[in-house]
Length: 183
Image 1 (cartoon, rainbow, N blue to C red):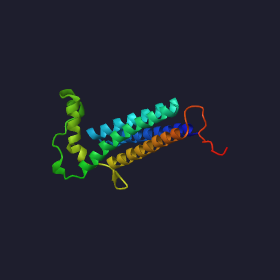
Image 2: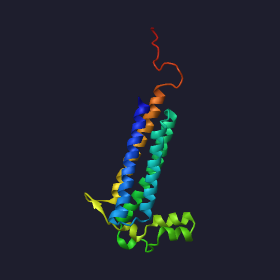
Image 3: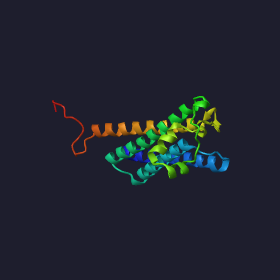
Image 4: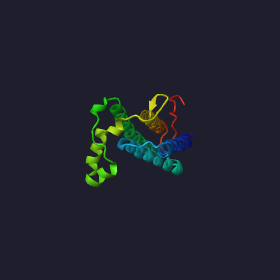
């Protein structure tokens, strides 16, 4: 029963991730919002999370595989949460604290190793600080942070639940009920 529940939860997480990816592409190509480096890093984490959830949904693994898939999705969600949280912090700083350089990511990758590009992205360029779209008074980055936190909570809960269930039920064929001394 719990494995079927995990499989359907993975599928629902895949659908939610695919919808979020669709919204991000719609906002980029139809509305015209230009994503910054941190937005692209969040989109990459979202793509990884969506791919892991799709693989787990199609694969339908056993107990150990489910825990591994939930831990993989936890890692992707954690990376997305850290990235979105950092961008929210940058957006709440005054504009003069933002880094002045606003070069394209492709130009940075062409001229620098990827580790220095990652450091440059996390410094935050002026386009990462700018809030250009809001819904219900929350920026796109704050919505992204909420999504990643929700996926992280789901992954932690499911991982702990599956570990607890496997602790309660032994993997061997023996019964999980303890015999009473009087029986």
